[in-house]
Image (cartoon, rainbow, N blue to C red; front, side, top):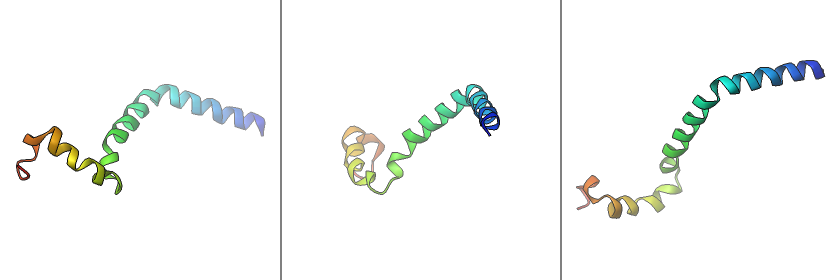
Length: 61
């Protein structure tokens, strides 16, 4: 059992070493894009774009 576990951990480590950078970039991009999609966040972030970026919201101007 231990040998199989060690083999799976070695394959997992190899996979993470090969695709670790891509996975990290994808997770970071998803983390940067996902917060506005949460139902709790928009209430906090809706007035911010109007103040920080008035040119991006011409309908509110």
